[in-house]
Length: 106
Image 1 (tube, rainbow, N blue to C red):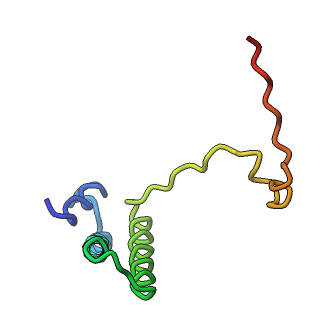
Image 2: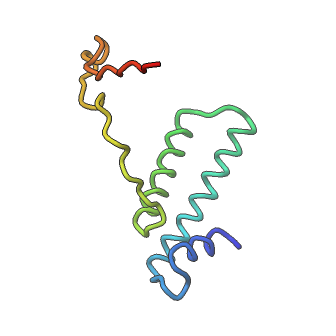
């Protein structure tokens, strides 16, 4: 099965998606192929230019936006609240206000 068919199935099947969604899916699959070609080139040469990294980032962001638009990219819930999230960097560097852990008795 090719990428287009896999993504169509992930979106509910051929009979349950619009032509617009099909169009987005074709673009997503194309971008995935281009991104994989970029990755293969990097693995082969171990070299990349600033321009090629920017292009890769743009392509990956475009793919992610399209995937989100049609429901293929499911956003995860934010992680549980961390007390350190509210500390400014200077306070954190100076020891912060982390609650002290109690010593285990034993």
